[in-house]
Length: 103
Image (tube, rainbow, N blue to C red; front, side, top):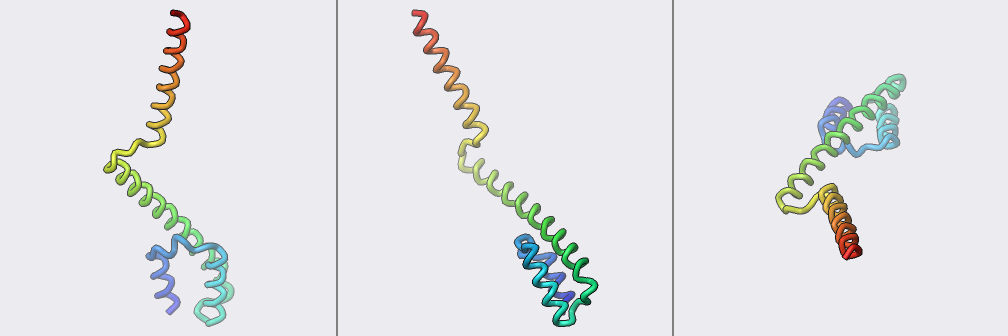
C-alpha cells in the first residue's frame, strides 16, 4: 500500500504542491501505521521533498510556456516590449520639447 501511494504521488501533480509540513505529517502517519520504519522517515522526507521541488519546477515551466503561447495568440504586448515602447515615447517627447524650445 505504501509503495503504491508513494509511486502515485511521485507521478501525480499533487506532489508539486506538497509542503514540508505535509510531507512530515504523511511520513509520521506511515510510520504510525507500520508502512515505513521510524529510521527511514528522514530519508522518506528528504526524497519526497526533493521530488516535490522538481515537480514544482516542471509545473512552473509548463505554466510559463502555456502563458507565453496564450499571449502570442492574443497579440498582447509583453511587459518588456511595453517598457521599450514607453522609453521610446519618453525619448520622442523629450526630443519634441527640445525642438519646440529652439524655435
